[in-house]
Amino acid sequence: MEDPDNTGVIHAFDPPRLLEYTWGVEVLRWEVAPTADGCLLTLTATYDDRPGSASFTAGWTICFDALDRVLGGSAVPEKDYAELHEHYVRAYGLDQGEVLDDGSIRFERQLIRPKELVWSVLSGAGTAAAGRTPPAGFVAKGIEPGPVEELTESLLLTYSSPQGKVSWSLRNGNGGARLVVTQTGPAAGEYLTAWHDLIEGLAGTLISEG
Image (cartoon, rainbow, N blue to C red):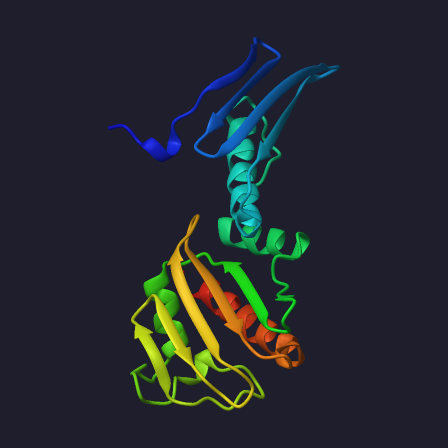
């Protein structure tokens, strides 16, 4: 079956030293250089999805570990994808939100579980419903939530508060749900830490839900 999102074109081919090609919107460059006891394999992946970087790096790390074992390496430990993913999220600073020019804040966070499970964890024992106060999982410390204004289960929830309008959106990402949380208002930056703590708490809970 053809996959139009993952077609590619070879840009450079010089075996056994170099292969570069496109893969969807990415560019992958593989280089092999001899060393005293084997060779050094270098992969350079170029793409425009920074929030997905932890997913890509964790996935390629597992692939390289598997390749090393196939080639006779015995000292490479098995690694858990979730653990690697969260390690690279912190290493790349992907857990940090941003304050926009108008004072609003925005977090975009790749998660390791499907959006349906993420929604379930956010809802907890409550039920999200239009016209009702959102479940506590959708509310950061210091935010006084009003009734839910927009709701599409597992995809979207918005509500207003004296601190600004809050929006949660979920879509399919690389290896799990891609979460975007925004809060409008010139004073929203005051809540950057509160939202960070809430979202990272969610990410930690999702690891144990696997």
